[in-house]
Length: 123
Image (cartoon, rainbow, N blue to C red; front, side, top):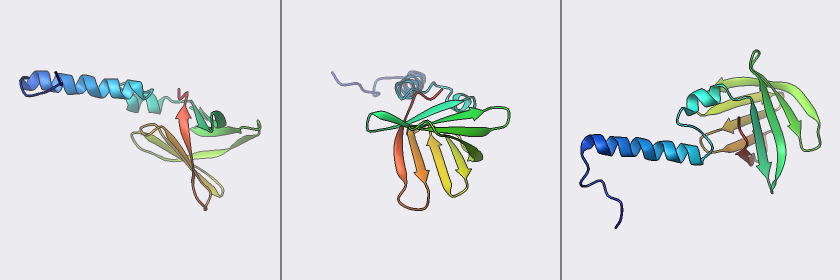
């Protein structure tokens, strides 16, 4: 028998929707308090082709970010340009980077075609 809301009371319907939303967020690797989790986030891995392409680590006190690429090179020039509920928008000279925790995407834009990676191990 398929799931239906037809015979549910309004309060049960609301509770069920909240539970489904929470389960969806948790399956994406985020908790039901995603905004708080994103605010406290200190480490994000950006993956493509089955391996880590770059790792971003945030120094919470200064809100600066350190990039470590797949070759181990470290770049500490990243700054938070802005924030919204789900994303960090980072910049360094010549490059913009969006860490989108809602879509689990990392988008690197250096003026050409943006590179899109999958976010894993965000914490």
